[in-house]
Length: 357
Image (cartoon, rainbow, N blue to C red; front, side, top):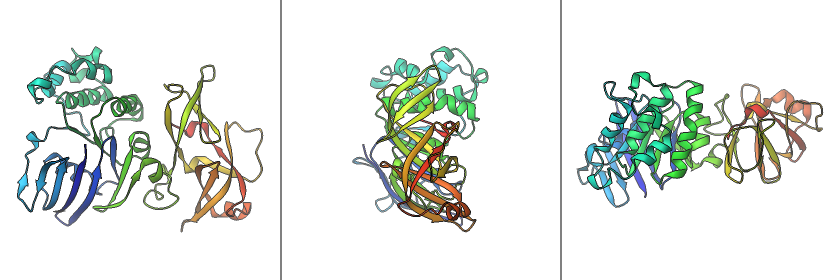
């Protein structure tokens, strides 16, 4: 199923221009607040009529300003999950979910109720009212309501932005299951690198109403410089590996990369499963001789592939560790002091607690 978007739209002084396609999986619209992400989702959903352009899903034209076509939102069969759950407070969880089923065609309404309940782990919540739910539970119910409308496409607009870190950690595994176990394409809006790195197959980077770059998540989040390098807290790389083993005694997961292994704080993972690991550049230090007596478990051997400098006195050093690229954000003073240059053998020391999969 292919979503095609080619639109131009103006909101006051703000100008939006976007052209892209999404061929399934999770396509993330990523960028800072005010970059135009939500405006694009509203146009896809049919909540906003674009000034110029075309939106289609496979052979179905949803909007075409030249041909004066505009399919209203209730006929698009798209599920929409907002930043706030927007549940009906006077209805139970079961009744909120059944409200979503009401929008599905009759021949599809009874098809997947139990599977959605199981997918999102909300079977024990069915008789509760929204006031008795945590923020993460409310969002899971909101996602369930959207899924039970049997949508052709799921639009998720900053669904975790209103949650604290504990609630985000609670709901992210369910979003991963949603990505892996359903065939519903998802457009996911977020300004969080950690979220998008964990969930997205493809990333569209937005800034000031325009698309800066489009690519696979692993490629986008591994750029030495460019649209993501300015984020000092989250910038880094995204590596793919395979779960090799679980160390239950020490609560660690062992992930095999191309030639090296990473030790990650234990999480629910299946041996043999392909996972992605986000390594923030700020949590990598470099050494020209192999360090000893450290608490860090992850020391990867590699060589300097590239060095990029910034006006604030920092540098991003790209290290090739046997085919896996790791980026370290250090000071330019450290670059000079260590004599770093392209081709120099180095050791990348990574904090174990900095890794997520």
